[in-house]
Length: 227
Image (cartoon, helix red, strand yellow):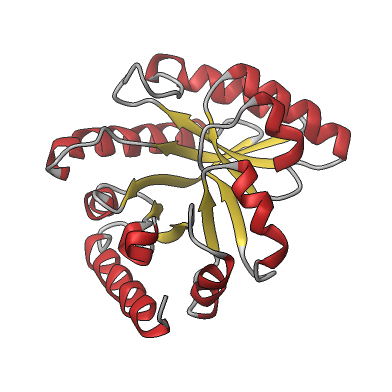
C-alpha cells in the first residue's frame, strides 16, 4: 500500500473522529489489521498508529516477529479456549472476553505465566444469537466476578453492532453501551477500571464516537480492499 494513500486515510479518519467526539473528548484508534501484511502495518505505525486489532491467533502469530515493536496488538476476535496459551504472549489486551469459561482459562494461563492480562468484556448488546458476548442482565455480575481474579484486569467494555445499511439504526445500542460504561464506572468495582469503551467499525465508527466510544476499530477505512 502506498504511503500517501494510507496517510490520507488516517488523516481523514482522525479528522472525522475528532469532529464526531467533540462532546466526549479524544477517541483512540484500534486499526483492524486482519489480512493486512506486516509491511503495511509497520507503515501505519510510522504514521502514528499504535494499537492494532487482530481477529485470528494464527494470523497474528505468523506476522508477530515482523511487527514494529512500538505496536500494541489486541485480540478482537472470538477466542477458542485452546488458543489462550498461545495468544497471551502476543497481545497487550484481549478485547473479546465473551464468556465465563474463557474468563477462567485466561486467568489460569495468565497466572501460570506470572502475568496479568488486561481484558475488555464483550457485550452482546443486541442479543444476536449468532454472536457471542455477555448479555446486559448478566453484565455487572460478570464484571464483578472477573474483577476478583488475579490473572485478568478488566479495563472496560467492547461491543460489535448488528450489520445494517444505515448506522443510525444502531445508534440506540451505542447509547446503551455508553450508559453501561458510565454505570459500571460509577459503581467503582474493586479490581475493575472502566477506561476503554471499544465500539464502532468502518461502517459505523462515526456514530459510535458521537455516542461516547473511547476507542473505535476501523479496518477498511484505513486499509481499503486489504480488509
